[in-house]
Image (cartoon, rainbow, N blue to C red; front, side, top):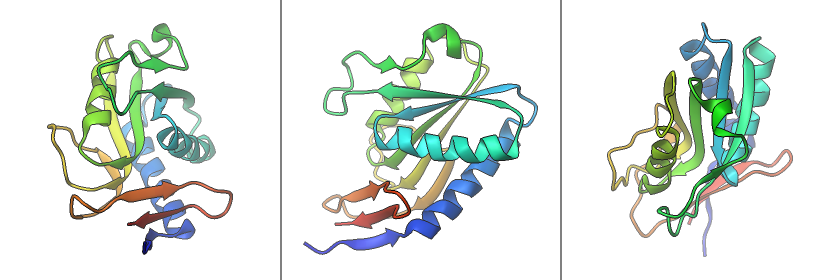
Length: 165
């Protein structure tokens, strides 16, 4: 099986930094922003964005891990922080790859059960194969692929990369 690297470590770093600046520009007047990363890679990506945001802004960045059963998105969704901690706040939902949109739309739905101030979505790679009317407000790369192809993002120390199989 041939793996075609579509993003190397340096490219992912650049895209992450650009996305962090886009988030900063969007929420420049806010005191707090919740970065809600979908477990597991989405949360790792949210942590990377959060590190950069902590360098460039005094805004309080709250990290939240969102656990969704990707095979059964109707099952209960849990977060690492209490509902009261993201209620009436600005939320950025983060995932690594936007495939069909199922995970992202159910993640959005979960947070809309409470009032929110502002809501944005982030993905590193958008595959453009959506089943649902969901979009990424900020994305690192848009990639048109066949339905048979698979995109995988790997976060490793000094060796982040994304490949297409």
